[in-house]
View 1: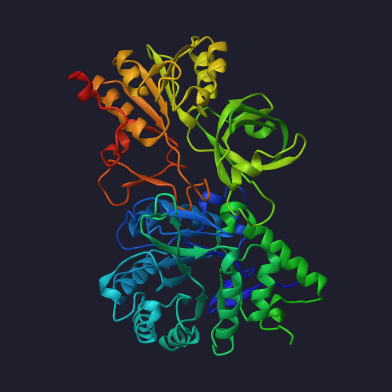
View 2 (view 1 turned 90 degrees about the horizontal axis):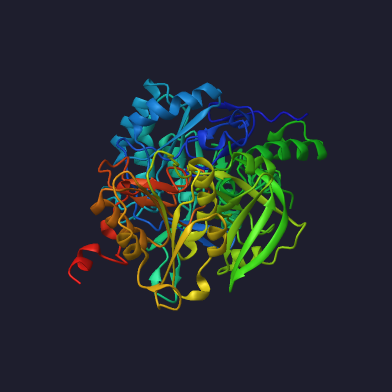
Length: 308
Length: 275
């Protein structure tokens, strides 16, 4: 049996599989289908300091081999997370990557401090790339923090100074060159980079001539974006020293392996969990089987091992 | 507890133009399913369509469950091509289901269009728990879209038919018929159908001081409360509670929970008083 354990910027995971934020709730939603402790880590839905109602419906629309969403960061807020969601996650003993979203870098830092103090996270994933919230304070000529390398570096630095826990930064693919924000995150002190968030997209009902989403635009996810994600991981892996957590239409072990070969250290199952609730657990088994089949004693041998 | 099972198709029969009843063998799911709950059906092995489709249980038998399907989009077209013996991946039972209270005086089901889907299972549950058949109002656009009438009559229900064009039963709105059945405090109304119909039913119920449960429909990705794609606006005012999930908090809600003010009305009882 191959060694599947990895160290993700200071977080030890027993296997390289987590879930993409927003596709797995707070873990409990999926524990009816499989023991979520089988995962290397659980990544939470984006948390904000105060509860958020999110966008008005309709919020999702299915597209070829994927879906558009414009949830708008609906979440229970930090306090309710700590009171009502955390105890279950802790009872499972699975590492928790808390995905956080704030208004301005200080709010991210405040959340990181509070979550660390309350034992609410084992690592942070700072969401600098949500396409579905309209936050004027974040805009400095960029619709998303993640689209400005300067802002990415500044935010990362400030959050970094607020916590000793591993810090990952989740970036948007809606940029000309993914290496720029990725390097900025690394310079700011990120321990890993999460690639990719959703691609901006939209759909219109030709009969009513109305947008399918109330928010008009949304984020595209699912297998439809997988080749884009893979290419961005490959691009970023060649310039980064810190590890990459890959997400973007990864549905099974065969998909996951491609991302390791392109240079990712860990992978996240995204909206495939909506279709196949235990997809992430199947991915763990499939990766182990692949290593066996290919004579790899350690999953880390696969990282960046694409052959030309 | 919900599960995912590969379920063989027992029978697929057309019940109206472009509508069929799909029955699958699913003992584990049937054992746990309650009226008003639903399942997510995988419609294709490939990645398009990517998401499962939600269908409420129309019938709950000992070893099988039935789903009423309106053939419209790509997903339902694929389901309508199923052959007996072929298996379908069924995830369920999901959601909360109807609350059945035998202490209620009268039980009135109001079904509009495809909203009839969960109602045969509900009527059956009411017969079993309360020992008497509920009254049923079936509303549809036209006569040929009246669904499940025979099922309700066979259970002993009093059935009222109403159509938009008067091609069967009365012409008008289901809420209008409900209003004229004069439900009172102590009765229970169960409604499922389009939002303007439910908004009207809810208004009638509130005006008469009658409790009302509504079953809502929404596009959903997961069915488990994770994706937050299927929310509707509630009357709760705090940020954290404003949006309720059809899949997990519902699909059945106390009508007083939902914010109906943002929806059009199919029938306005206040206007009717002036007629």
